[in-house]
Amino acid sequence: MATQTSPAAAGDRPTKEPAGPARPGGGRQQTTKNNRWSTVLHRLDVKGAPYAFIGPFFVVFAAFSLYPLIYTAWISLHRAELASMDLMEWVGFDNFIELAKDDRFWNALGNTFTIGVLSAVPQLLMALGLAHLLNYRLRGSTFFRVAALTPYATSVGAAALVFTMLFERDFGMINWMLSLIGVDNVDWEGNKWAAQFAISTIVIWRWTGYNALLYLAAMQAIPLDRYEAAAIDGASRWQQFLKVTIPGIRPTIVFTIVLSTIGSTQLFGEPLIFGQGPNGITGGADNQYQTLGLLLYEEGWKNYQMGRAATVAWAMFLLLILIFAVQRLLKRLAARSS
Image 1: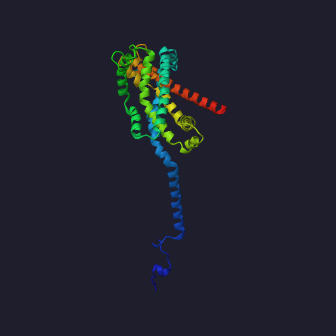
Image 2: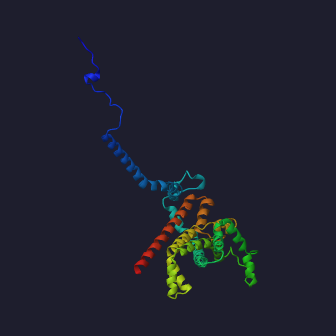
Image 3: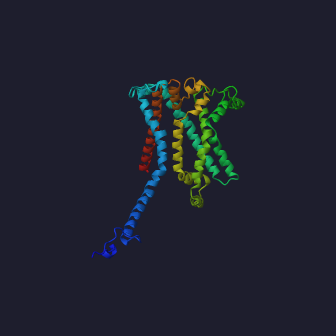
């Protein structure tokens, strides 16, 4: 007689494990996977996060600085006009050769250098003295510091326009004041050195306060112990300034010199507005105050020769590289000699 038996009774094993707590071996594997994933995330956080934060800057830099620089170099090797940039003609280094033979380029280079020296040297010296005065405990020191920064906040157009009226030949205030001491009217725009002096005055007025605040910030970082030690040794205020303050802010002085050099090479707005009209683009009737920036503008947007304008731009860039190379060479030579 056949009998039926249940699977459990027959000893068959179930096809699936019953639900219940995880086995000890599977828990360790899961924990190991979680630890590895946490380690990967930690490494990405430590090593990748800085790149993620600075990445947007380099994207913007590549789009608005690196690409224009490379494209300008490409244009400088072509004969290109502003109205037909898509029809450029390859000329190689002919634009650079023509620029080296152009008297206007050397005149603009000389004007850029002289205006740069006339504006940068007095500006930095005055900023140094102003910062030294602001470093004293003065009543209302915050007001004086804000007032020193006000010219920097003024637009270059407004500043140049006001100074142009002050230096006007027939009705300007400067000539009126000079007439009080018996000096005849000075043709500030027509005379080369007078024009460059007037333009340098605008630059000095705008940037002295800015550099003074940079110096002031550096001075306040100098430990007071140095001044106290110098005072105990009998050093006067002037000796403390020369022996303690100047060495203490030397990196800031180098930084402002670099900034002034770059600004002098790119000088554009002040001479353009000082010329009051067509003479502003050419830097005066005889190019007596035409800078490299004005020559670039004249070639590109008056003569419509973008290839030559790009060549001037690259000449300015190479000039800055040359200046910094010479500066570093002199620094190394000075370090070796000392």
